[in-house]
Length: 94
Image 1 (cartoon, rainbow, N blue to C red):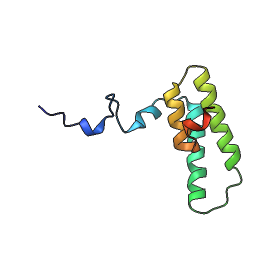
Image 2: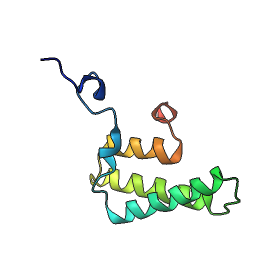
Image 3: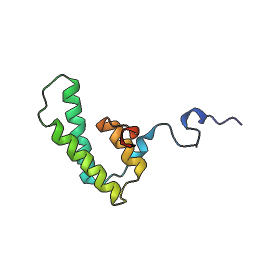
Image 4: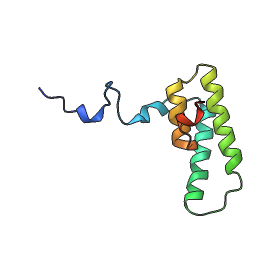
């Protein structure tokens, strides 16, 4: 029988939809993500957002803290950085 979900996974069998990496995050991290979502939406709508840099730094800091503490995986941390902060893993190599 052909795998009907073949197109839903990558070459290693992991889901292409990485939303599962956002499930069960610590509340402090989730709050930072939610704030960044609002900030990003305001910017997308062309509205002025004076707190963007503070929100960006707070989320980045929280991601780093929870990654270093082993509360979230490096995979989760990079997923969140790419999705909400616009970072690319290659940017950090050097």
